[in-house]
Image 1: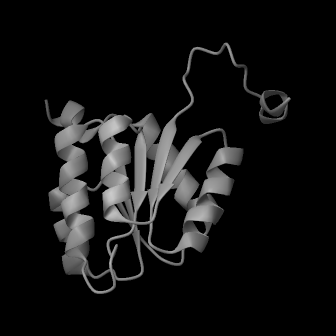
Image 2 (image 1 turned 180 degrees about the horizontal axis):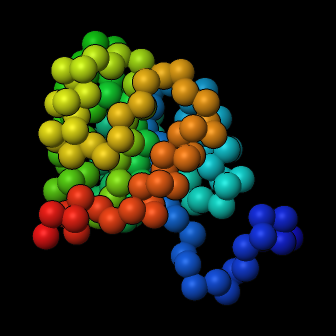
Image 3 (image 1 turned 30 degrees about the vertical axis):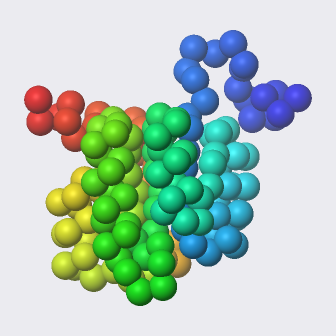
Length: 145
């Protein structure tokens, strides 16, 4: 029935995109999970870097939406996670969604491999537009090859 309301067919050739949301704020994980699930994504969430690393090691995600600060005062956790994702699955698209953004941090995140950098608060519809745009465009590796 859900497929009927979303206008999708279980037998369609396009597999359901897998999405991982990594944020230490449970309310953000919950609201984004609900929103993207209703948009037809299979969504997992993680609130800690260890939990995210386990999921990333087990599942090939099409998109990861992550905060940069995954502990109280360290943006390097988020940058390290971008590098880890790039090593494990270079095709995964990475969206950084953070309240702690500066031009320098954005540049560093992009150098580590982030595809998009958004500043909180951002309406979920705008985050979804960025995600959809990334899914429809070729990954960086394919563009530079």
